[in-house]
Length: 121
Image (cartoon, rainbow, N blue to C red; front, side):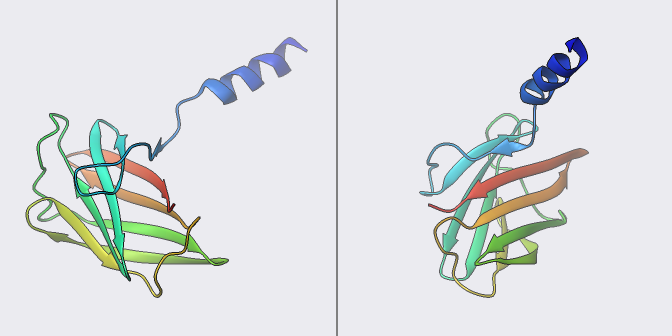
C-alpha cells in the first residue's frame, strides 16, 4: 500500500514538459521550457515560435534545428521549423489549426533539450 501511494505521489509531483500559460508580447501563448521563454503564434497555416534566452532577451535562432508535432482533427503531423531572424522558428501546417489543436515544440537550444506544449484556444 505504501509503495502504491508513493508511486502515485511521485507521478503527480514529477515535473513534466512545459505547458502554455499566459499571452505574450506577440499575442500568443507563452511558456517556459528549460529556462527558455517561448511564445507560440498561429496565423492561417503558419506557426511561429518566438524563443528567448534564459535572461528573457530574444535568442538568435540561426542554426537551430526544431520541429513541431501537431495533433489536429484526429491527425498527427510533424512540421520542420526553420530559423527566422531575429528569434523565431517558423513552419507551415497542412491546414489552419482549429481550437483544441495540440502542439509540441522540440529542439536543442544551446545544449538544452527543450520541449514546450501548447493547445490552441
